[in-house]
Image 1: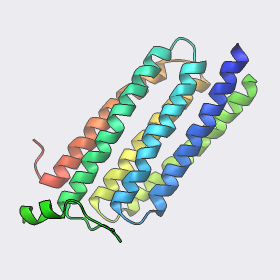
Image 2: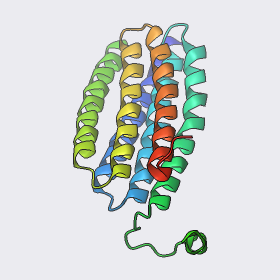
Image 3: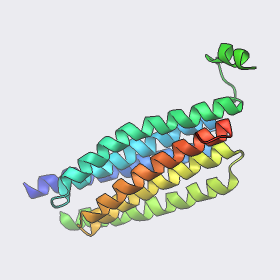
Image 4: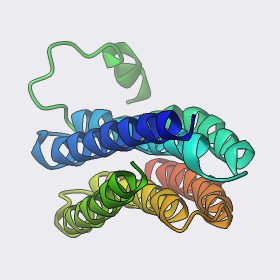
Length: 111
Length: 91
């Protein structure tokens, strides 16, 4: 039983680290603010949550707190990304090679 | 089996610390303030990951409480800073 849990924890840690690497590479490589937000969201939700899944599987008697932290991250991740994106849009930061801008009418009304 | 897991945990810990270095470099280089805010948010999330890894390596669940506190505070700080940057007023 124990080795199965350790095997699952091993897989969770490896995929969690993979997503963290992908998120940071996205942060460095992507052209403008909004796409970079897309990358950092991955790290916050996928990377850490998968590590927490490993913590739930393998760590001794801390699995309740780890589940609570998973719920917190699942809620807090998208909210911070949305707050930053709306702040960037209100600051008028340009989108690089954007195909369409849904909030264009709102921006006209603001000026 | 356990030794494989512990070595992968150590490798993952070094990878995360290297990623924190990249994110801090990204904070320093950020074009505008929102870029720096995104990178700071990423640095705190990666620190969260490092805390969880430490709690796995030392097999002590107190670090998950620390990660919980860090997760809650960094969430509030990021949202407050985003609102301040956009509206020039906090509340």
